[in-house]
Amino acid sequence: DIDGLSESFRLIAIYWPASQKRSLEDLESFIIENTIITGDFNAAVQEWGSDLTDRRGKELKKWIEANNLCYTPTNTNSSKRSNRNIDLTFTNMAEVKEETLSVGTSDHRPSIV
Image (tube, rainbow, N blue to C red; front, side, top):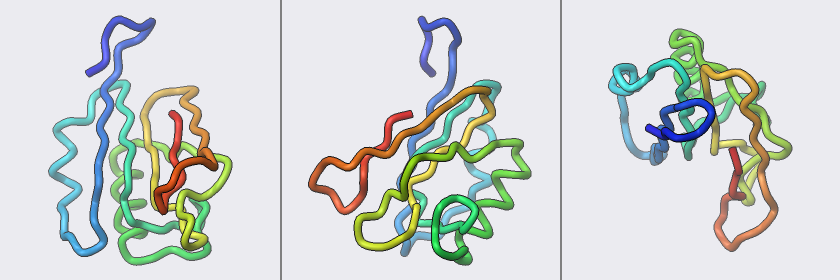
């Protein structure tokens, strides 16, 4: 939880390896008013900047919608190795913006929320 700003909010960062099974429902108890969930989901959704939607992306999109969260668009996809946008941010807050940078040595482009 981040306090001391004009508005308090909860920030949840996640890494979901491609080989790992996870129940997204485990996160639901952590979602409160003013929540941002961000991280490497290894999930591709065409509407979120990837060339295609994969199975994990379908599952994630359905879960995001069921939990009244919105995808936060960015200026470019996050993967340097493909046209997939797998580093994603979701929120139930108004006016959250994200920018993906073209710096660093990782195979992912960093984002600023």
